[in-house]
Image 1 (cartoon, rainbow, N blue to C red):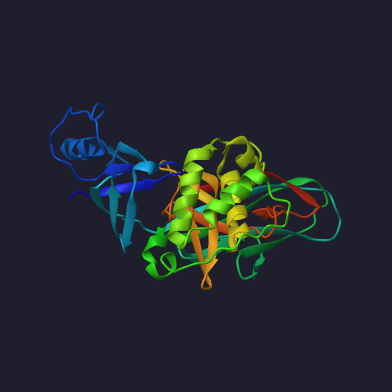
Image 2 (cartoon, rainbow, N blue to C red):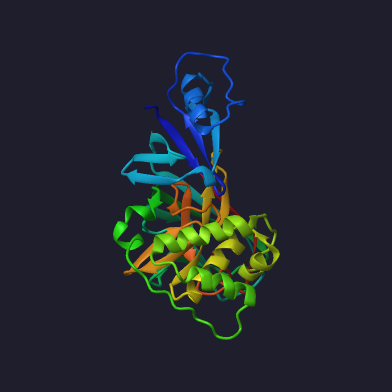
Length: 340
């Protein structure tokens, strides 16, 4: 067994080797199977990167059969091959910087509302600080900071900084056998306005008898019919269905539409994704409600759960919801998330 640091991405899973033999000058570019790749990886001595080893393996999600998580020990099944790794991760410090242009006014403060990470199945909030006075609000699904912006006699720039300390861990829906294997009866919620093509898909999916089979069948549908394509704007779930492509926003929204039409309560989740170079990108996924539990999974990556690089910020109640909501006495010039 060898130790790996694993980075789970939208469309594939990447590995960093943390322990190899002393053999140098070996390339794994021409291997013909994942099994050969794994054996080759064990023999390579590669340079260190951020205290670990450089990326030497990248496997599309369609080649991943199953992931089992037990604490920090994870087993990954790849076409009858088994990878073991120990995921080691200290708490991270994430800073949100909001650059605001205040309009000139003599009186009347205004509020800046920011959705921030809170305790959830894949994350634990270890503390939040801000450079302005604030109070908090929790609506049952989301945790927000409300920051009072004082009046200004002239137009000026203000930087609002929110520092969050987080402990992140992966979440695997398949670990909850009671939920994923429990029998379900799906009933199509047809209001008469459904797209006929979508109605056919829903009619096929409603025969799924467990949550596991429902998600597996839906992932198969996405794999065969919806390609990932990054969009500048958010066009909606039905756009992805009709065009055959979409970004994480469109794909996740489409899945929420499908689940809700089948009688499964599901919500669209906005959050962040930490890439291997510690850059942070916006991302979206889905939470389904079952037995009073919020169970996240990522339909863009075809994952029965989410990885340690996912940070949940909010679940949408409406498409008008934004991670940062502003008043009418100022406007936001820029928003940036950093790992510090």
